[in-house]
Image (cartoon, rainbow, N blue to C red; front, side):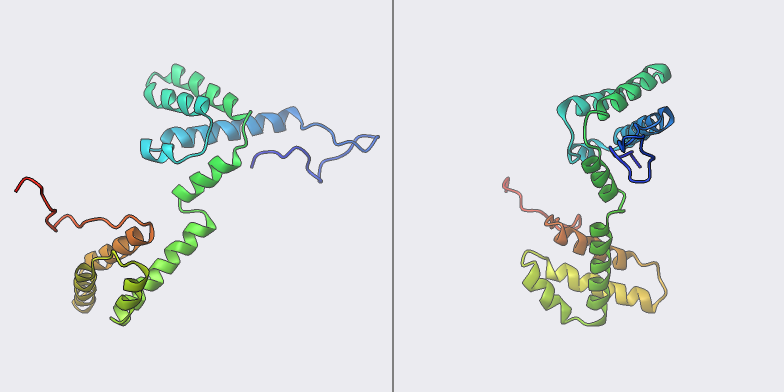
Length: 190
């Protein structure tokens, strides 16, 4: 965790003013920021676009992704850490937590979608609730996935349709209803 400006557990000097962080604490803070930078470099280009950060930091991270030589990369990562000392790392850490599925909101969303999937398998009438929530949903596909998931469960087969049902619900919830790969798309060339 990155050191706050004043921690109530730190000793005060004789005048009651907080003592500055120790050299060791400052060094730990710098390494924590550099580690955060390493996580940024490990992200995909699409994920990196979603992270709130200044343009200079984004440029430095993109440059670090490009560098392959060990020493040059190490120096670039130190530079990324240096840039991060001048910004608030909390929004970046929050977005990384979302990507890693660590945020409470993301975990709650996953649990809600898992319950919805279980409800769909237990009762076909839940599809009506999905219709009200997401009118753009492909109900033919949802019914087929439900039927296949139930068949897989009865026959002790791998849960392919069960997982696909979750993916479809997750995409609907994200507002990114996708066209299934096996469904033909409209072509204007005909």
